[in-house]
Length: 221
Image (tube, rainbow, N blue to C red; front, top):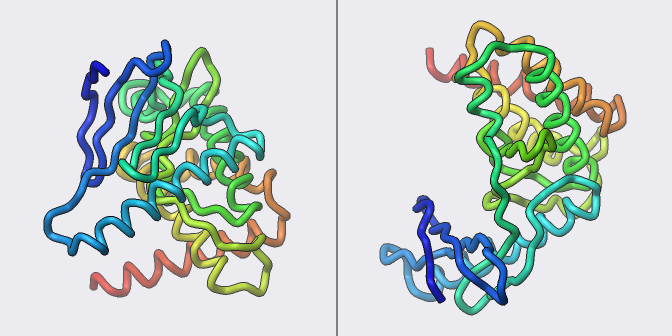
């Protein structure tokens, strides 16, 4: 099959492939020579399976994601729908913060809230992983996803901390992109996030985000 490499990441390569008459995007986790063979195989298999499972579960929750066509746990490949779109990060870098951009952030927050309500951590929820296709938002790149194994509860400190870490990744990315307007952008994001969770959970997660940021500020002094 003819392959067209479009990106090379830290743990995987992305390429286009003609598969059963379709042009699909393939994510293939390649071996890492610095790891023991057995450990490397285990890690790549675990992450490939977890990523595919998270994408399928997200779709079941009503979150637009690329369709998963095939999961190959021998060669560590996921064949998925190839979407042609514009990453949300480009809107934040090149344009002004208008009603449309705020609407996109609101929707992004709702997507993450839906994941969290089901006990799924995305791992890298940044505007770079929101793809806009014909004004429809898709959540992509579940390579760092994690499953809590249960729905979050207000007294589950470990789960709330993990959810907060996900949100802090979003906040830090917004600060890096638009420091002057990051608060406005994150508040819009959090509004959408809160709509997908119970208010008690959302408030508790926000409190943990504040704790994380205070600890970081203290550590770097």
